[in-house]
Length: 170
Image (cartoon, rainbow, N blue to C red; front, side, top):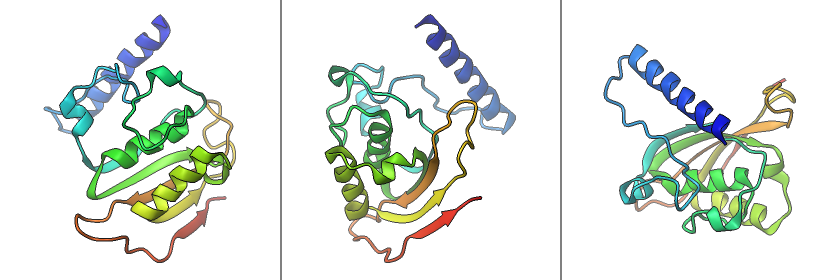
């Protein structure tokens, strides 16, 4: 929609101003749809890996199956699973991720929920699950959320975490 494009441009301007105010003048900031095959990403973008990912992605919807990238580690159409899969895919060896997720992602019983959680536990070091208070993102979202903190083991190493920290913020 036109409104969505305007909001996206405005967010880009805010992000650029924030970077400049923090002394980062030559950042590589790009506006694109990272979940779509036709989202404006180059081959280099699709293959890039990141050492740090901090994210509060949108999670309240489903995408049309035909618009979703085929290289993501989930076949779900649910945005929260797609974004978590995207972060898992693009995290570099030794890299860390902290992401806000709806609590339903932690307990969902669909095949996609179960498979993505299994991949997270099998291929990554899940460090912490931080349960946030209900309504913490109101008025934008009323759903109960949590923060997942995980890392990809360094190259050539296997998972090494034996304990996962569970926190509940009141």
